Amino acid sequence: MVRAAPDLPLTDNCHHYTRLQDVPWDIQKYWKGRYKIFPNYNNGVYLTDDAWFGVTPEPVASKIAEDIWMPDVSTIVDMFAGAGGNTIAFALTGYYSRVIGIERDADTLACAQENARIAGVPEGTITWIHGDCFAVLKDLRAERGQAQEEGALDQGPAAEEEGAIEPLDTARTVLFASPPWGGVSYTSQDVFDLSTMEPYSLQELHDACHPLPHALYLPRTSNLQQLADVLPPRTTTHGDAVSSSDGTAQEAEPQIRVVQYCMHGFSKALVAYYPAVGGPQLPDR
Ligand SMILES: C[S@@+](CC[C@H](N)C(=O)[O-])C[C@H]1O[C@@H](n2cnc3c(N)ncnc32)[C@H](O)[C@@H]1O
Image (tube, rainbow, N blue to C red; front, side, top):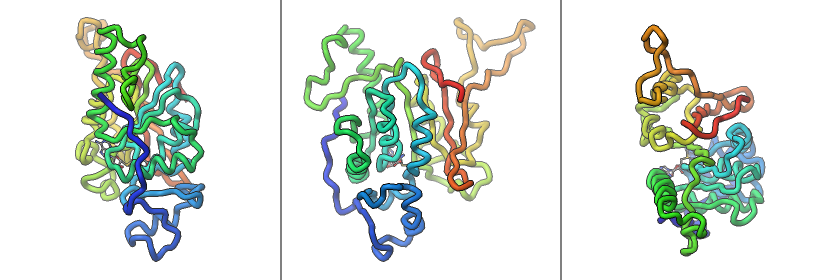
């Protein structure tokens, strides 16, 4: 059973730096650009030192929150909530009845909760989960299947138990993932090899999300062929590869939308939007 995180306390690892001399040298360049990342920084944005490296700038997060929206989808899950950049932007759209943010580091999650408060997200709009997103996602999907089999969904959420989270309605859910970009630095490669991304490769991320519609926030130089290759080829209802009338195999139709998100003329990242298999489709923009 997956439970919502309580309000976590800010710790000594959570900082709202106001003076350059307090900022560790390796994040000073990010701190100097703090108002580009968080126009509301002075309201009391908190980050762990690590979170500076991965946080999505607010203007980019807001644009993604618009672009990811799909009719008939009521739940969005941010698998790597970090300090809340994207989760908060999703919540502020008002498009979703459920916004779920998963983060495995308690200090970072405490920052995200604080940042949501100061961004004006109404209390209770975001369900925060402290845990491993792969395990949580698996549980929330499996529980739905189990509840459906037992006919239990109409009897109110299993959520009657304190803090327990209602399983996902996968037909009305979209996933967003901004994983760590570890491994060989993407800045040292002309084309970033997504199979070497650490700790989670593109394939692992895609496997965890498929067949739900999902959007992956990745380095701007990501290998586009690899992004396409993780989609399975289209198959007939018998499971055969789709082929043309003369029997030759057809290429799978291109189905992914890839968007570069730029600020001040430079791409910050790309997002690969994968459609659902047999479910809600991403609209053309
Ligand atoms: C690139 S950051 C996400 C930044 C976030 N989009 C933001 O705007 O603040 C990646 C985050 O994923 C968290 N993380 C890494 N592996 C995880 C996992 N298996 N489950 C949940 N969170 C994870 C890290 O602690 C880190 O905070």
